[in-house]
Length: 96
Image (spheres, rainbow, N blue to C red):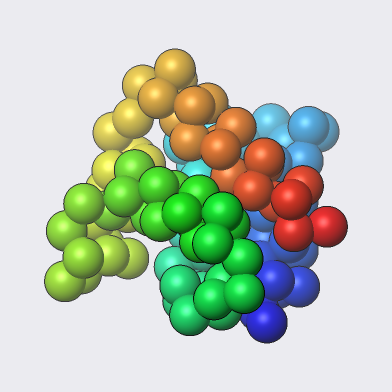
């Protein structure tokens, strides 16, 4: 499972000491998040559903998810970005 790479990316992106705006940290985390496939969560239906929700919030156009996710994150309000970051962090803690 690619959860190790995903955990590393998420922990680096959402490190409390980072001075970058939350949107920038989401964009940085996108590269690793979008390389994880739903098939990797076949054994855990709940994680699969949560991961799907994160993907839908980051990129509603699944034909070009990486570009759309970057554009989406860049244009999120702080409230929206924090909501997505919270979901990603919750997901991260469930992986560990």
